[in-house]
Length: 217
Image: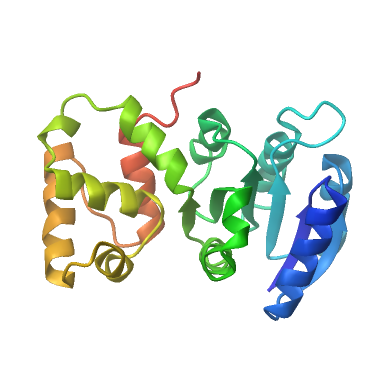
């Protein structure tokens, strides 16, 4: 896997380079702003761009706007956004325009190296990785019918599924059997009026669209 990193913090940028290199992932460029990110992707054509949401000069949404440009110009490029805080609308900007190869994680998740690398590889493979805190806020905001028809366990499965987890991963995380997960997933789709899809990222996007992640704040 070949990766471009865009992060304005010198220490975090260097740490990410070292972390990925130690995992056998090639970092072809590490830059500090959105303009340099666009140039680096055009030059190196990486598999994934690891992008800070807020970068110079204004430290608002430069990373998101650059990511949108990247996905438009190179649809096959995977993008994993990193943010200091939960900012739902930034996740929405990408998820409502594109399908798969997307992630949005809090920077604190980098400290859990195994989880971070697993999420990065999942996004690079065309999947989705959403931070549990983002998912939790979306669920809290949308606790209206028909979500109220879900049982507590189905809500747990929905939250974990929205992070981009497979059925086997959900079973391990929640400590339940694989058949139970499959039953809960089928119940969730039935109650939400959604048709289950074959691929993990498509069903995640279906759930996220139902939760109105695309609703502009």
